[in-house]
Image (tube, rainbow, N blue to C red; front, side, top):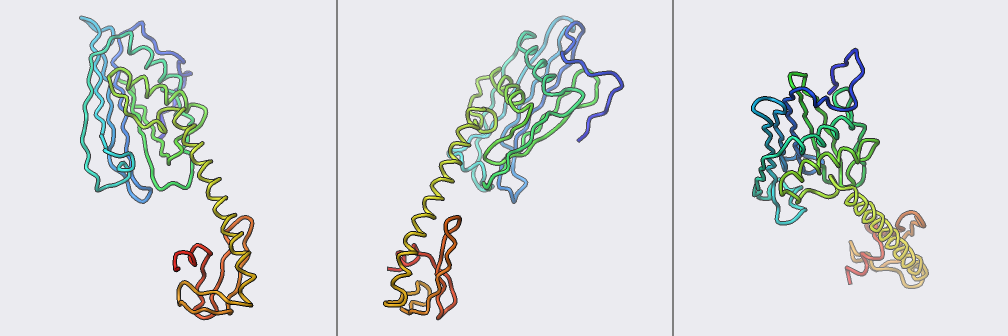
Length: 262
């Protein structure tokens, strides 16, 4: 979605000296990568600033509540919706407007992109902003379990957190809206990668030990259950898991398969 280009440079700060009609809408969907997802959050701020008899501003957050975070990815999990509303003042609206301009409004889209990882979930947040009778400014970003990054990433997260803070809503996804949550996700991913590498190393050590018994004793195939010396060893260390191929049935197995078949 491209914004309409303007001939004059976009202002870096909102002009608060004249009356403003402000509409800000944030939506969130979540689900599996293979699905379009379903709505999980809706937040809207509507404000009239400087119009007689004074400022009129309200905010509403409608958020899905799940018993377990993993249910966000399931299309079958039941959703209970919680609503958070509050009247707000002009003083509270001003920081939001400044934050909106800092991430590119109204001239360009925020410079952010989702981090690609190996997770199966996907969250998409979309933002629509409109001031007075200007064309709506819209954009969206999709991300997996590692959140999003980029030049305007922290500015966007800060804007969303400020929006939530105007109500009592604080149950937002920390990976999406909190840079500390993103750091925790990166640490978790790193630990998972290290654990996977260690599991491969241990499996390859066991496989190497088993090769010495193939000619003398043979190995039991966990698939066809034949105890045979017609076993071929495929060494894929150190980067991948080594395995065996049974000459009787042609199927492959790793040391863990032998342990499970005992």
